Amino acid sequence: MEIRYVYGHVEVYTKGGEFLFSADTVHEAEEELEEMEMAS
Image (cartoon, rainbow, N blue to C red; front, side):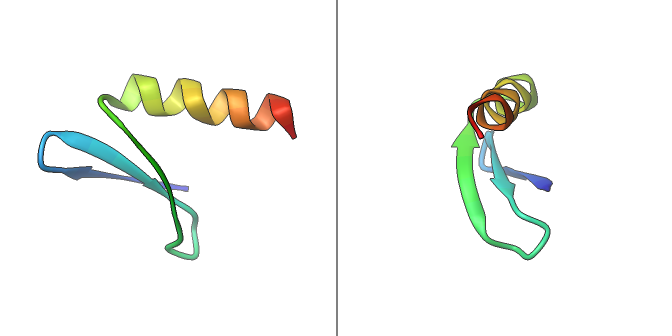
C-alpha cells in the first residue's frame, strides 16, 4: 500500500500502483484501510 499526497488530500494505491480510494487525511485513510481489512 502506498499513500500519496495530492493537492491537499491523500490517495491510496496498492503496491502495484492501482488506485484504491482518496481521503482528506492520512488518519482517515488508515481508518478506511482498517475497515476494508475487517470486511474481507
